[in-house]
Amino acid sequence: MKILHVLGARPNFMKAAPVIRALAQYPQVRQVLVHTGQHYDFNMSDVFFQQLGMPAPDVNLQVGSGSHARQTAEIMTRLEPVVLEQRPDWVLVYGDVNSTVAAALVCSKIGIKVAHVEAGLRSFDRTMPEEINRLVTDSLADLLFTPSRDGDGNLLREGVDPGKIHLVGNVMIDTLVRMLPACAEHLPTDVPAEFALVTLHRPSNVDDLPWLKAMLEKLQSLAANVEVLFPVHPRTRKNLAEINLNGALGHLRLLEPLPYLSFLALQQRAALVITDSGGIQEETTYLGVPCLTVRENTERPVTIEVGTNQLVGRDLPRIADSARAILSGQSKNGSRPPLWDGHTADRIAKILVR
Image (spheres, rainbow, N blue to C red):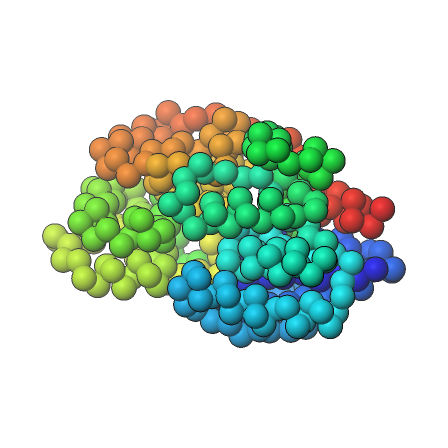
């Protein structure tokens, strides 16, 4: 049995790593890793792969950046001959990046079965490119591995055959559980006893320069009460260079982007996380850390319904008030969703190999 994994961005590798490890327990399974090169991340060194417990990719398509249409088309063009040569029994795709939908399109047209890991998530906002990728991939996939019950419900409402849907849990949590014991050794230096942690990278937030400036001013105000650590995404840093902030940053500390283990160590210790990231909503829910999500919608409602996440939108007064409430001890109690137990990859492997 041959299984080909298509990976395009760093989060894909973190989701695929436990699945690759679980499938390696079956001697009849041969695995091929294809990196489309959609994102090139300097933190994805040999150490990164070693920490994840996965081999380096067998094939790198070296697609690089570009518009959504151009990048998706380039991935399809370069991936098709690889799939035709390998003729896998299954192609596994992960998440909602352009590599995910490109691989689903290629394989569905040439009769190769596709399994989608992290299926069924919906923000119901079709202005998000990721939402289009999710909808198309799920409509084409032969197996859909969902992380939570809302994913099952979304797929059923869209008319997906119930026999294709498998609630398996959140595979990203498998990686988090495996990495947690090691993250303390990677805690950045000079971390205060209490701090808030911030990440902002979505174009809808950071490309809006007036809003970004106002948000930074709110963070400066928050930093008068608690130190604020802000690892800055390259896109965000570029836009910050165009903003004239009033006054010194004080206890608002702008950091370079951090490797996963260092960021995980900060998340685990934070009094509060403010983010527009999807994955961080999940990780804070597992860790029991209060999270404010700076978006108008989320494809991960289970983190709100069950977990520690609050959706605050781009409403700056609401963000400030919610942050102050959490820091004063009024944080929301949350729990871990069902099957977020570190064994999702084992369930996926059993279904594929049966």
